[in-house]
Length: 224
Length: 263
Image 1 (cartoon, rainbow over the protein chains, first blue to last red):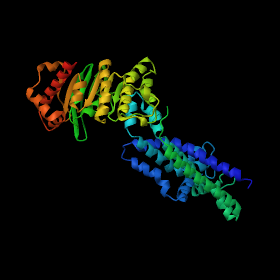
Image 2: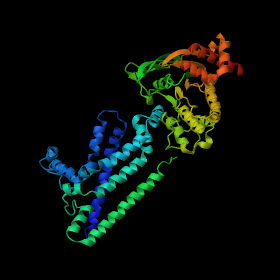
Image 3: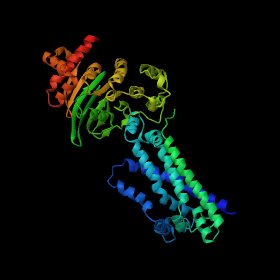
Image 4: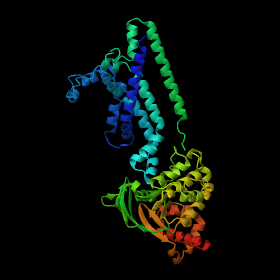
């Protein structure tokens, strides 16, 4: 079990980086989905939600093609000497971001919708520019949505299997995360190791759900 | 001096209003659906219709020129107070004031005293009564040092007792503030008590206006009797059903006259 710490660290690193990137991407996306009146809004919404209904292997397959050496998307990067992102940590992050996107966007979209027009109109009449009002009114009022989005994105990334296997290949020390390690342990009949990892993830999942429920109850206290 | 003209449609509703107003309280009075709130939102820039708007020689809207609400230096009191629930009362009061480049100075203390807000400063909006919330909303708008104060039925969500609690503060503001105030209401007594002039709206049109000076024209005894008979609410309903606007205007004149003789 000497490599266990490495696997846990890699998994946490992947989930952490993915969550950070997701919050940056999902916030403007959710804001737009919550406030736009464009006719194609629900089309964008459906595309964002696709990872929920697609089997992770389908997503992983397309991502593998998109990030592979023969992809047109990779052409600009190949000029920089990067031939492929498949089977790399970067590829893993990209895959996780796509896969967990709906889990970050949905709670944020709901939270922004719940804020409504009125506080933003009040802020505008009090000289706050739209950007100012976004940071000083919308974000604080939607903060429980941010917490839920971050927790769900983090937990969902830790729990994913199909996408990371397809795009990462489970290379020890490079792309082998916890969920894949459990699969490999079972295949190698290392039951003790599989037990330890599975129980650890169980405890983690329970803590996340419990934490979410507690946070939801405590949301919404004014600050001085 | 404020000069405004707005025309346009919002769904089935159309607005076509031209008005000018100076210092003091201009009451926008009329039944629901007459366009009072829409007119107020146009003045604030929250709704955009065709038209023009100049405030003390400065153009806020004309043709392609359209100043965004946050560049207009208006104070707006919403019907539902619209306090920032994540901020304390004090932070709510300072939200606009800080953005106007001011802080918790002497004028801040004076406004807090005027509205009786000291005991509430540290509280969150969730811990306030309806009347207290509305006083905070009024203070928040006043403290941003607006050039135009817009109030959209600030008392309509309150019961009679809470209303009586807030009205004296509005009276005090009317007497002390030099800012022109537009005050939307469908309550004739409120209009008569607070207004220096009353603009009557119906179906998105300005049907008449009443100023304190016009009170000299005298009021019709028949309509005074009608007011005593059916009350203000009923007369407003009659206006909505097509009663002649000048009748209601004369009633408003009479109410203004009574207010003057009380003072």
